[in-house]
Image (cartoon, rainbow, N blue to C red; front, top):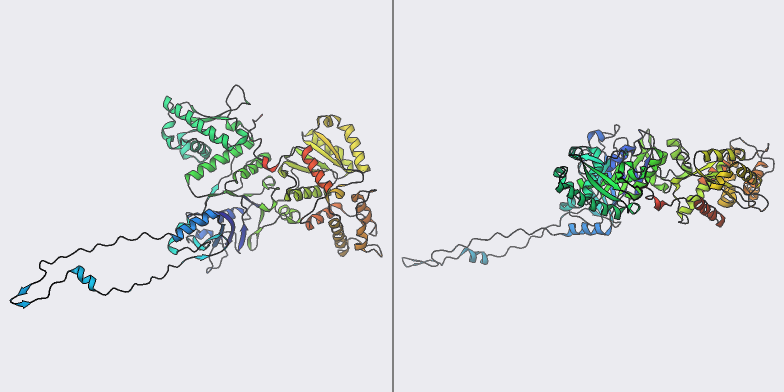
Amino acid sequence: MELVRVEVQGFKSVKEEVSLVVDPRVTVFIGANDHGKSNLLEVVLRLNDDRAITDEDRHWDLPPESKSTIMWTFKCDDETITKIQEVADRQPEPEPEEELEEITPDVATSTLAGVGVAPVTSVEEEVKEEEPESEVELEPEETTASNEGKLLILYRDGINSPIRVLSAPYPIPLSKVDEVIRLRPRVELFEPPKIELKDETTLKELTESKDFEFMQGIFRLAGIWDKRNEIFVANDQNSRALDEASERLTKVLNSTWNQGKDLKWHLKHLGTNKIAIKIEDPAVQGRYTRPSLKSSGFRTYFLLSMITLARSQSHPSNSYIYLFDEPGTNLHPRAQIDLQRSFEELSDSTQILYTTHSLFLINKNYPDRNMVVVKTVDGTKINLKPFQKNWKAVRESLGILLSNNFLIAEKTVLVEGPSDVIYLLNAIKALKATNKIDIDLNDLSIVDAGDSSNYVALAKLMLEEGRNVLAILDGDSSGNSAKTRLEKVCGEELGSKTLQILQLSDGKSIEDVLTSPQLLQQAASNIINELVSNGIRTLKSGVDVATEIQNVKSTKAKTLGLILDETTKAMFEPTEKLSKLSIALNYEDQVESNKINRDGVKLVTDIAKLLSLRTEKAYAKGVFEEVS
């Protein structure tokens, strides 16, 4: 059963009806503080029986006659539909028939003083002689509405209202509605993981502190949770039990985490009242290591896996939905990327929703998972497609440029200008959408030098920071000059391949390789017409924009970027070329399905190969690395 939509009205900061589309795997609420992100998690949490709508949940401006309402729509798989049908069709147990006591008269016939008396008939015979009553037809029990879309729709409407069924994929008798409601997932809200992974515990800490949910998960996975009250006593019997538990834990973890299949896990007594988890790692000779000493990726994934296991086993359910409110608050940006990958791994088996106002927890591989939450005079609203219009909604909400992971990415593509960043990122996303390339965009930063004069200096700066840099240069005189200077200044880095150069073919620029000529012409026309209509630029007498813009097309003699500059510059009085960045932004606004040509596919493929970029499916790789 998969949650696909939530509709809410009059709940906390949500005044007017808001419809929330839920991703099958991970849903991200983006926005500044106090805009209602946490309230949307609360809306999902109200799906649990113990989280009814309270008087404090009502929107403060809600009219007295109006109710706070929440509606959850689930898409049911075949297994769930079968369960619903079985519940609906199950006949009630027949009540046992009441046996009649047979009464036998003492005398069957009597004669008194010669007066004949009719024979006494037994009760059983009397019953037989009575005319049978006509059968009373019972009216069929009222049922819920049904639909043909495999949807189960649940709702609450008002303070302390129970969860009800609005519609189901099969008619449900009202007497059996509660059984169907119990098939829904349980929702669990987790506090932000602090990556302070505690890998040793006392009995008191294990059973009474929320900070030790990680170790609770370990105990449950190792099969010793039910023995927790006695196993902390260090004796031969309990040491043997810990050894057996360690074998079970190792078997489960090795089968689950391919990247850690060579690790052996050990539960050991520490002193008289403490148990620790240790790791036997072939890469670490001479000693055990500990989970708390592993990489941030390991700690993040391991911590989340164990605390979700502990929580789910504490509250058994058919399935789960996990909520995380600002999970990256206490994490370094690199660890936030690891957290993203951990969520991706966990979402193989459950749906996850989380809030953030961090650039590094916005998944650029799946833009339609991200939703911007804003507060207006009419309450909290949701932009379901903030990735359109060049992520304008995200930039306005968080004040960031989404195409740049410069702060954390160790692998950087250096391009000549800001428009090149947009065209390259757009091409990568287009190729990812059609499954022609598999790149994890969270690993990559694309940085522009601003102009050719700054190119070498910026390359040197990034190299000094320890980055791997791929310099992409146009196939023109400017690109040739930059390549010559890079070879002179960065010879050592070129030799070690921390710096690599990828120059386009002669007469080719990024525009030639990665854009659609028709869309590029349209973008340039849009910018020209906007400037003229706003009185910012003046066209030369007799210039027809639609005619002149047709000259913006690839030739063997000049790059498309240069032709774009020359053509647009000549249209104005006084002459002045257009901003390439403005054209690129307009280009991205109108692009829906950009078809990348063969040269463009080769360029993106070469970038991935030269920088050894990880694929999306490699999110679990490397999390078992030892911290140096």
